Length: 336
Image 1: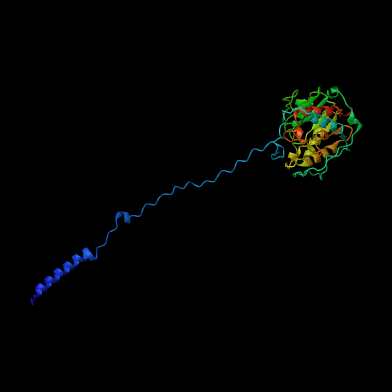
Image 2: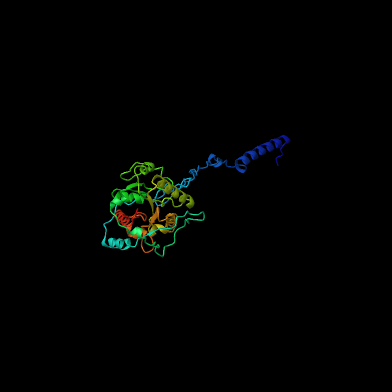
């Protein structure tokens, strides 16, 4: 046996220790360093998220002219739709229907009175009418037929339906102050748009000549306003024309009904409301200087609505029926 000296044993120990350290580093303690790709946090993908925006509010549709809107002082600012310019050919059935009803049309007169504060004008969607509008009793005064000379001192004041009369069936000699959308609220704010007075103000037309008969048909564009305020405006208009023409008679014309298609769907312009309004006008008549005439039976169907075949918009008669209206006026006059 070889015996190592102390020095040799120390040297051998150092060699073994060194060898152990070398081999341990190579085999025992070796670890794989992570690659750059492993150590780096992968980039976060940017999400392309469109900015959140609030969708613009849907644009409200322009109000059809069958709707009425009002400004802050309750004055109508959108008139009923303009009159119909075109009309289909007259049929034999149309003529027979009008002829059979014209003779039944009558005049109502009542004690002169003011609408009281308890008068109300319901603004609700009308239920389908089930009965025809009552026909007022005929008076001897309303049955007189005349020629056009009777109207040589007549003034007609009205809205688009009166525009229709002036354009499609003017009565010779008569004067018209009319414009689409006219109401008692703005009679001084507009000018006439019909032949003979186009561009003239109400004051100009009223003072142009001495009138003996003044016809007024206003109200359809007032519907939806405060009822008592409207009646006040109406009386003020009557007082104004009578002050300018004290010897004239005033004839209040009932507002035409609308067709069932409109009456059953319009909360403002419907026949229930129109009938209430016309009743108030009838109550203003005294049978002396203020009279009331109602042409509705000429145009109504069995339910008291404007006959559907007579209109395209549910509100205005076809052009050809204004001639019927003219003839009716000439056969329902007030002796002076």
